[in-house]
Length: 201
Image (cartoon, rainbow, N blue to C red; front, side):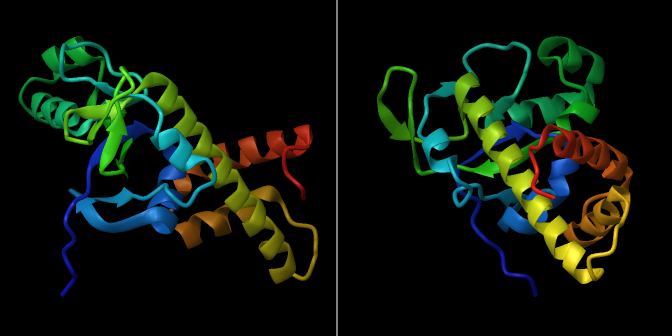
């Protein structure tokens, strides 16, 4: 029987779809919200600094959702999409498809308010705009470091022979539980990064 874990303070962050499998595989903790494991970013370089940036109480007023939302707002939107998708999309700018691009992120017990005050991280607390952008950057950097390390390992695995990027990416997808529908997008970005010298091949 699978052990049940208490859900820690959580806020929701919009993350590029093709990074979800890796996040769940490498950083997913024991707590779950629906089908998703709560992601623990704390060990990624720069994550703790970002988590201590100013947060936002996004339950004070309705408005479109961009990069992040609190657990409370996410629950409201999820229920709204089930009962009246058109009205909910009009109020928050979120469709069911867009809602699926958000992942639950474990947060520290305390947060920094926009007024510089430390307080308990509750379900009403979401990531501030700068904070959300910083966390997205932390995740992107961690993802591509992991792909780069996998590529080096894959080269050793195949004896140093030349191989198309898509072959390595498809192996990455299988090993991280990433849906292979994303393999072309990962390959294109990997090739762009190689061309710019962002990766060490």
